[in-house]
Amino acid sequence: MSKPISYSRQNIDENDIAAVVEVLRSDFLTQGPKPGEFEEAFASYIGSPFAVAVANGTAALHLSAIAYGIQSGDKIITTPITFSASANCVRYCGGDVLFADIERDYFTIDLNQVEDLFKKEKNIKGVIPVDFAGQPVNMEELQHITDKYGAWILEDACHAPGGYFTNSYGQIQKCGNNRYAQQAIFSFHPVKHIACGEGGMITTSDREIYEKLLRLRTHGITREPKAMSENHGGWYNEMIELGFNYRLPDVLAALGISQLKKADKGLARRKEIAAKYDKGLKTSGIITPQYDEGHAFHLYIIQTNQRKELYDFLRTKSIFTQVHYIPIHLMPYYRQFGYRRGDFPNAESYYDKCLSLPMYPTLTEDEQKYVIDSIKSFK
Image (cartoon, rainbow, N blue to C red; front, top):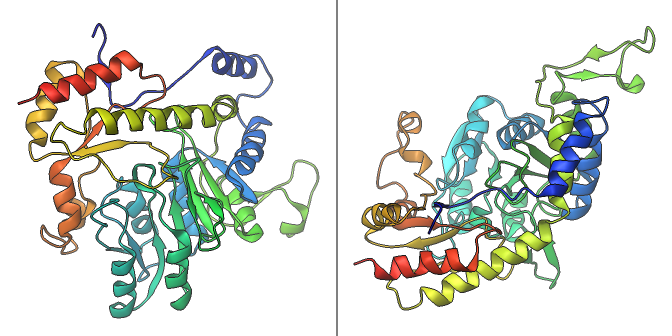
């Protein structure tokens, strides 16, 4: 191959460039109309009542955690196999993180272990499931558990815009549509389905939470007359709670709007790539992933007992794979809370063998064949 092949990359076309240039020539680089347009379009795509655009996926998690009222002493369950922000948002608010191990087959949080934690731990306020690699968590089943214990769900759907599961009534439920999770979050980092450079989105079914999120992303400030204690004139605003500068600029929102228009095409291409990996690696000795129909294929993750050797070998071929993720409970920061190796054997076994192969819509057939052939040539 004449150029390196990374595990992921953004797909920027002339339409995307034109959308950004239009904003650069407009009156607003930030706090203009584009974030609102992006929110409306994204909410429609996901099937959610409300959407709030923010600076990045971590900001989305942080604001959602605040909106749920996490405070010191609250316990929140999440998975150890995710990016650390899924757990860190709990710590930002002073809460305690509890981990539930992952399923062996799909690598998502094990709902049986979630219920076991509810049975033995007190003061669990919520669960942050992750649609890992694009594999949707069954939110209907999770809601049956959380409802029994009066807990909320914050769906981390960063890997799964366009993904879905089928509920017990045979209905397709898109990831992040808030039918079962009152809040869900997405990321628009360049390796994600929709690339804004940076950016995030919170979807919610609750109007009060929606209005709170709008304030929280802008320093806790409101201009809404009904929310203010007084009004001195058109310039007047009030800071009514402690918020943050987590706004998404118009430049990035415009890119998001353009990217969203080709989201379905990109998702279809990801599924084609996954099918070719399945077929091409069938006799390679590599363990290919199991997945449901609604998988969104942010990642295509294989497993091998020679992960480090294969990783290094592929780099000599200019194929740059990646590992997702180092279990959070083994990070030095979380070890201080008593976590250690052996606590979550499924997560740890998965980590020891996992490797993410190149997966992005502009990966060519020749490039993918080169990846497959290189893996099959590895001894």
